[in-house]
Length: 227
Length: 217
Image (cartoon, rainbow over all chains, first blue to last red; front, top):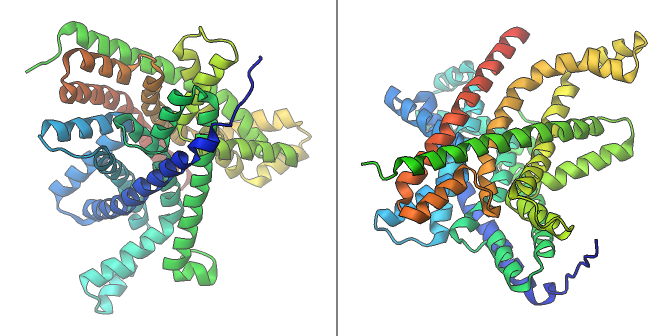
């Protein structure tokens, strides 16, 4: 093997790598927020909604979880186009990511909801908490606290999955890497750099989730354990 | 309205077969490599433990898409530039699955109660006997549902092999789309193919899990 590694192109291209990484983080952050809301609502709907709603949500979750993200993103991207809507690649990417992660979040949060004991809800009713208060303080927040580690892993996977949005030409890290390697012909080095950046990003996302968890779950911060 | 003619539909079905084939390659390769990494993860040697953990961290922190490109160009640079795409696709998926399967199986191995390991030691079994006759039979039962669940992930992830030009189901869909440009119906059909492969496995995994919990209650 007579291949010599040459990373000198990094001098000219590092701002582009950085811009790609930044867009990757932005796409992931927006999708995480909206996906979390969508997934939590779906989980509540599936647990306590009317029968038809349960059925709709269950089909949504199964369809999304049993088809590849690549196909989902094509369907959404071309779906917008066929419906006559002009949307940017980034918007289609976020829409696909939200719909995808919503289904996974729903399954995870549902497990959390199931772990809340009935007596907790009864106690809340006895204390005269309204339905909204019961849902927020007694059911949803403790449920999310319990499944928080699983959610963290899922959102790291989401950040990595956002690389697939390069297939509809959203200009995130992988798309940038594709372009740089076609300009520099340094394919292996380019993807090594991209891989290292992704590993760093996954550490950053994990750290951010840990800190956020400390912030929103005071019990975890004070006692160091979950419920 | 059926936008596809029979030949195009057959082409998609043919691609679906390759998806199954690639999934099997990834699963078998990933199992062998993953089992070794899982053993490394619970090794008594600290260096081996660290190496296995690093391997898992690196692979799980990199998107499969980047792994695919890395192996695709890496294998070409090693001088094997005439190899078919299935080699690099299979290698990348093997590497990817190994990290995830290793982490799943490590959990299963460690969930076998410590007393079982100790009892096997007391009976004077050597390490291989202990692993293959005492620990694995018990761990296997716990490992089946999540492993079947991960098989679904592998099938879905083979769709990414399309980016390096391997003609499996997703790539077949793109090729047909380039010919007749009817993206929505074509990718809906492709999605149905994937669903037909993944959904039974998901259901199977779930029923296995239910049975397991009944047994342990």
